[in-house]
Length: 217
Image (cartoon, rainbow, N blue to C red; front, side, top):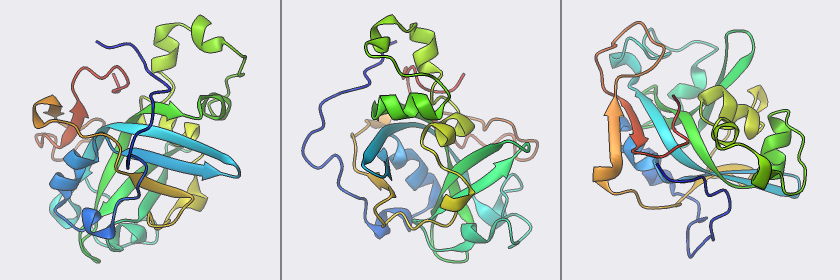
C-alpha cells in the first residue's frame, strides 16, 4: 500500500476538462474510465482537486438498485438528462452523494462517486470536513486520519462542499467538472459487488483502483 501523496506535481493536460462525448458512452465503460480522472471544484478563489479512486455504476431502468428503476420523479429527474450532468441526492437525513449522469437523455443511468484521493486544496478540504487547519499538520497527522477524509460518498461531498444546490450542474461548466487526470491501467482496476444496496446485489459494478489507500473500507 502506497503512502498518501496530497500534493503531486500537475503535468500537461491533467486539468483539461473532459468533453461531453466522454459521458455519452455506456455506463460501465464510463465508470471504469472515471478512475484516475480529477474532480475539480472551484469555490471563490480556491480550487479543490481530487483523483477519483472508487465508483459504482447504476444502469437506470434495467437496474433494480438504481434510483431511476421505477421511472422519472422529482427527486431523480436529473438522472434523465444527457450524460455529463451532476446528480446529487440527500440520504439518511444528513448526507449528500454525487453521481455522474451517463448516456443519452432519457436513459437514467449514472455513476456514483464513492471515494477520491485529495490532490490540491487540503486546507479547504479539511475545513469542510470540520477539521482545523494548522501549518505543518500534514506531518503530524496520523496516516489513518488522512485516509478517512474522502473515502466515502458522503465524505467526499462534504469535503468538496457539494450539496443540493449543485444538483443538475452541467460538468462542462467551470465551478465543478471532471478533468483528464491520470491514466489507470486495466490491470490496476478492481471490481466487486456494490455497497449498501438490497437489490441486484450480484452485479459487480463497483470499480476501484487496486491498492489505493483512499478507497473506502
